[in-house]
Length: 122
Image (cartoon, rainbow, N blue to C red; front, top):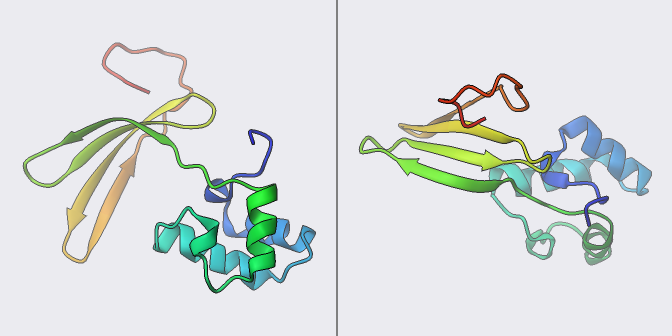
């Protein structure tokens, strides 16, 4: 499964290209993006507006793999600091800040940094 494309890690253009290569219409890529990123669904069988044949093809030829949460540090104000590990093995720090009707996610851009500072988990 490591060589299968990860649908969760693809942007709209890349996903549309993949679906085109599979002989599917580009709007199918938009449907999958909505299921994954707006509804939080990672099980293709739950994506009921997609045909069974396409769902079977997606299960056979792709994966939906999310990063592993290595640590979760909740705070009293509702914020969460997360340390995640991505497919490459790099670790990334992020903070979720809840707001009225939405949330903000601040993501470290230092994954793969070679400085190895003692205070940094990435």
